[in-house]
Image (cartoon, rainbow, N blue to C red; front, side):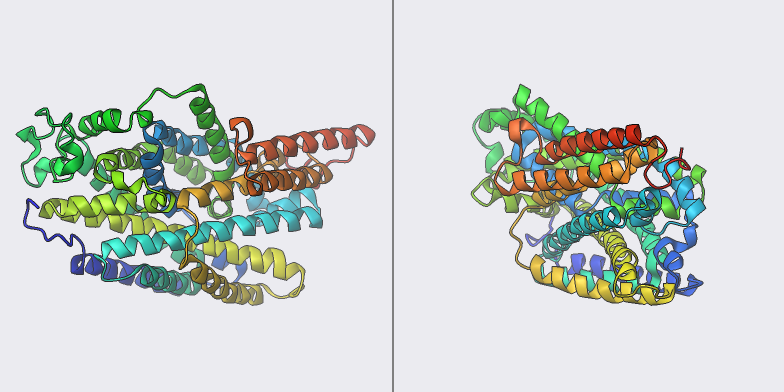
Length: 537
């Protein structure tokens, strides 16, 4: 303790931050409800297809950087060390993947009034079986995604409240707020709250950068230049005993942490082996091809006001990893000397608390760092809620339009389907909250699990948009075979055969069958092209 802040770094102040923020979210939801002209599927789920460039950028940003990223990425850096700098490239590759298909998909969505990703699949391939299988896989991904956000809610609120609110209270409380503004205001409420959440997230990340980059702490208590980290105490182990954690991060914070890692955990600072480089490429491919087709991201493409607005938003997104993912990586590196004790048997789950615990540690050093730490954690709460509301909205739309509208509610009006979508949101959220209260997997584990499944759907968008020759039968057989292979490998404990993710092995089989079957069909009947592929050339 150096700045007069109590050892319980968060508490009443953290609760005040949370309370004011949640009131703002509910207020924005109510305002969006008043602006909603109709309760139709397009009005509720796509905000009337009228999102401008700035709103689209902020809602994409807030959605793409979720609780998985903000808690899972520092935890992963804590586990594997400097190799995790590759995460910056992951998020950049997602933007490149967007540009490959998003503009053309948007143009088609404007012509044919798509609401869900399933609308594109049905229009392009005209195959009920393919549409149903894709809907099932997307629902699996969304349920996984939402579960991860609920877990993250509990972790962050418990720390931000200084232990005054337990894990379960954070899960239930924030879930209720998300449900409230999402069901009263739909996509417009989600987009508006995402704007506020996106700003909070940016401010929070800037707070991290101020705290961890050179001269950050000098603004708080003047301990930067005293040389506590550079006085030779590194070799004696004093860094691990609290000198780094005492607030003297200073201009040598990253350098000092690096020296500690090289001395105490050299494997985390070693030059990547061939296997490490292979793992980098494997994860890069998995993330870029999967995250670009998140259902909630696809729906934001549909909701854009114009092609220009969409391109501008995606273009700016290319720079966001430098101000988001990079600081998260640095947090994970800085946590290693301070929180080395997390590398126990339960590190897979404990590491999800790396950033909250490190911020809690810093916050006890000065009033300035206390404020920054609260700001950062509030940004994390914002990111979690923005992703949760987007995922819940997409899940609701797929259940109502792609499942109920084709089965039990066949022929129902748009208003009826929207009403049922809202009801299903509450039922699904209640079930997942119950499961999230007893987490059995880390946040990064959930990320990988959903990506292994989602990547099997990606050919329907990439190849479906770019290659008119892809047929419905080839796409269906390829996707089913790829999904079965990826899940079978994962469930039997072979998550990375020969160093490559199971999802990529599934994708390789998926693409081979999709291409081979499509070519055979086209050769036997040159005029037979899946769905409306000719139109989409």
